[in-house]
Length: 216
Image 1 (cartoon, rainbow, N blue to C red):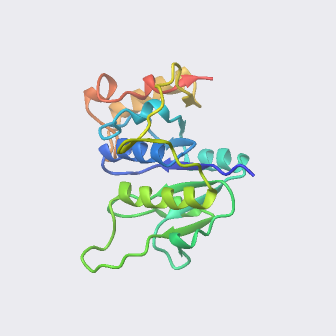
Image 2 (image 1 turned 90 degrees about the vertical axis):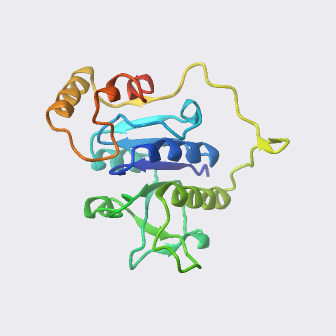
């Protein structure tokens, strides 16, 4: 049975965390990074890894959930809940998508509703209440890779070998050109707090997802 991992990005407060998440996702063999809601983000910290990682976009959590269920994929919330299991016990059964919470507030009620189960990362020191979202993602994705039996990447000296940059990246956009135009209009009219870049530069420079998504 092929076991794959996905990362679902929704409601993360710090824009640069998405780029670092992409780097961790690439390192630990994630199949796709799924963006829910707005599509633009800051790729700072990715170190070019976005060239090797497919992105997929959905407007709503329910759309993302339907896609993952069609893939026979469990959705795992990374959050300390009453039912959460320690990630080091590897409570996985099949391909899994990991949904990480907002850095300050954790997973929202709506986010928890689409999850099939939850894991948490045991801590042994007394100096902090939680981990940075990108650190948590790295730990969880590594544990899944161990459980799934992913093959370790070859090394050269003190580093792992990086593959050649793909000629054509596999990025998937689920909306029409009309909906993208409407999204941009809404963004200008109703700027909201979140991990997305609300400045004019978002459309022109830092990391426009128009360059990452292609119509399929």
